[in-house]
Image (cartoon, rainbow, N blue to C red; front, side, top):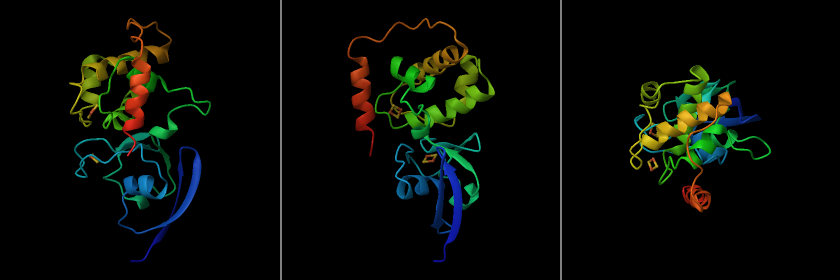
Length: 183
Ligand code: FES
Ligand code: FES
């Protein structure tokens, strides 16, 4: 099959690639660029595990052709932490609030939540639940995910958190989970 050249910036890095016109953005990210933090949970645009930002907006990358992102700015979960390794407030809050179990949904949840907070820095619980309704989690029951988004909103506004510090060992457990969820 013939290919076309696409040029896009991913997490601040410019890439020029020859791709088949049918290639999905999620496969370009995972298979061509090795950014496997973006997950595929369904391939039918239901689960949101593949959510990334294109030109600042959350999109399900299994529903976007790579050629549609030509010339665009893409951000994935790998681009959320600062270059010095400081976690994004959402990553920190998901960690502190135990907002993940298997972690499969987590990158997509965080990318959707970041889009939500960019548009609404102080969302209500209802607005968070509505904003994340395109992201499915089979493990957590969503309660801690909502709490993490509330806490991230507070962190971003400089407000003190009411959430108690995580118990000893929680960070190590979360690190192990994060490692384990890498495919
Ligand atoms: Fe894209 Fe499920 S893999 S929505
Ligand atoms: Fe397992 Fe959400 S933590 S799917």
